[in-house]
Image (cartoon, rainbow, N blue to C red; front, side):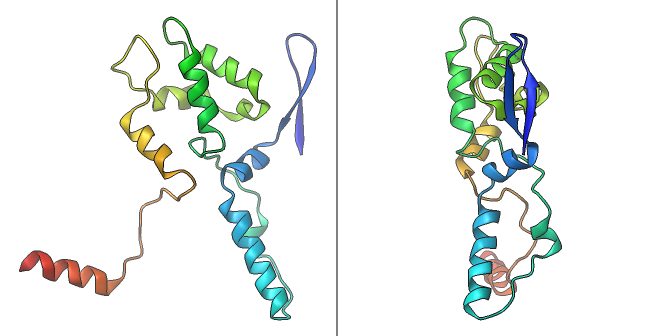
Amino acid sequence: MTTKIVAKSNQEVYAPSRADVAAASRPKKAILAGAKQRKNEKEGKVHKLTKKESEPPKNINWKSPTYWPLIDQTAKEQVGKPNISELLRQLRRKDGCFIHLRQQRLSEWRDQSDKEKIKWSKKTLDEVQKGFLPGGIETRFNIFVSLLKLQSTSC
C-alpha cells in the first residue's frame, strides 16, 4: 500500500505506507514466518498465522542497514551549520519512505557537543552496529549459565 503525496511542485509522489517501511527495516519477521510456513507444509500441516504474525509491523528500525547508510551519507553531505530540518527535507527528496521519520528522532541521535557538523552519538553508533539484530533487553536467562557466572565470580 502506498500513500499519495502532492509535493510543492504539484507533482504526485507515492510513498510507501508505514507498515511497508517497518517490514523492510525488519526482514527477520518475514523470513521466520516463511520458514515456519514451509516447515508446516513439509509436515503436511495447515499453516495458520498467529495473531502476532498476522498484524502488520509498526516500529521502523531506521538504524538498520536498509536505511542508515542513506541517512548517514546525507548528513555528511550537509555543508555549513547543521540543520536537521534541511537534512530531513533532503532525505525525503531522495526516498519517499522518510516521510515517516521525524525531526525529533534525528535530534535524539545527534551528538549535541559538536555544534559545527552533524555527528552521531556513541549510543546511536552502537545501535547501528547491531544492524538487524534485536536490541531489546534480555529477559530470559539460562539458569546454568547464570550459576556458572556466579561460581566463577565467587572463587
